[in-house]
Length: 305
Image (cartoon, rainbow, N blue to C red):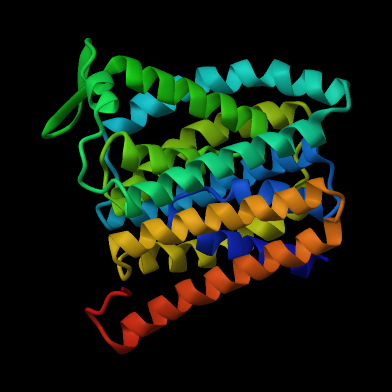
């Protein structure tokens, strides 16, 4: 069984490094599907995210993919959001509603951000975003990028929402941050991935500490997953340099949609089918990512189209 968790850690590390997420949004429902209580899956998922985000952000930093001005704002505000989520999570646990309600929340969020990511890539690329542009200019403004200022209110809402969802769902919030960084802040996919992982160091560390105090972290399996993730994360980060931005976006949106399908299958009571489906989807993406890296070594300078 521990070999299985070693493989899971490697697999989630590859996906986390490539997509700029801590991997808990994949790991948390997967741990639940494998028979671990959702409340423990939440705590263990956040603890795992700490390791992946630290290692992944170091690799992205070396690649120049971290926007430093964004990290303290989003990271700091998200801590308050994580704190606000803890009493809600404890209440759901006491009422024995954590499993069903958290799965439904996962489904809703994965659907929302998969659609937004795919729609941006296919339909609205380069078009004015109207209302969003006006909202981003509501004073007071702060400078997050060299060439652009953005409303403090936008950052406030982003930070609080990401933190709350992180604490509630047991995820670092990367699968939410990446599309928001792309769609709202206008970062390219590489910078969105690297900056997301840097923010996750803050949010996941705080959330993991709170869950550790409550005894929700399964250390016996966490150690094996972290060890497996180290190599996987390195491979995933390197592969981001060899994929064109458009294909990176489409891959991310499709991956979120397929993960949502796996959680729906679990929610319908077909746990074994969901396990095989989720693992199958992960394997397909992992093989594709690794083959992209392998192709780069054979043909330096090439990028997947």
